[in-house]
Length: 232
Image 1 (cartoon, rainbow, N blue to C red):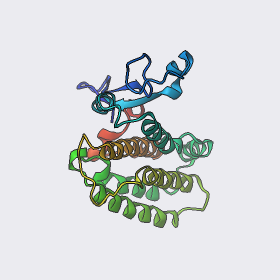
Image 2: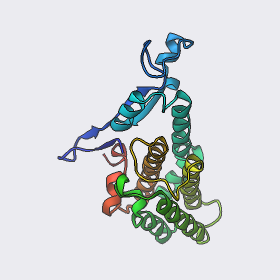
Image 3: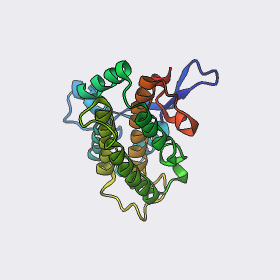
Image 4: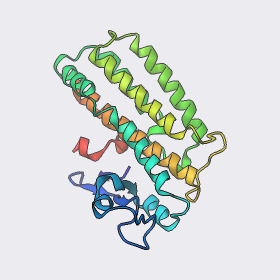
């Protein structure tokens, strides 16, 4: 995550920063002379990165092309998109009002809290283990949908969680997850870590909203990866 609570729990701390995909000035990383001034300063030319990744991509700009950063950005936006749909937002509103199937909702939250893929340190993660864990999680979510009315608000929320995981798979499908290992100088590992950070953020946001709908507090190490803007 690139945001979290201060020691007093009242303030938010940011450890990430916005970066240019193509540099704003000549001589900068990935500078594109064909861009206009408005294009250089526009949102389409920006990407949010943790400070370590931001430093790496600018120092090794030949290894991290503009095209590669744009792919990272698109993958990030795809995973976040599930919580921007009108159907998801409406479903959360209905769950808060009706609170149907509370045991299923509690089971959904517990499934995610129990998986270390959502809270373990990145340097302790094995991509192949992440894949196996997420495969099992998707199977469990599919089974839980059988306990909901098809198309109901809770069913819609469960589908969105599954789709978010699918977007993560799309983001990392070009990598050999059986051999990929933590290496901050490996572009593939950096892309994998970026995708996993985004997955954690999107899932955290969705589960926090689901928990608040039923007054179910999130527990354990998982809580540390819920976006601070949500829990504040």
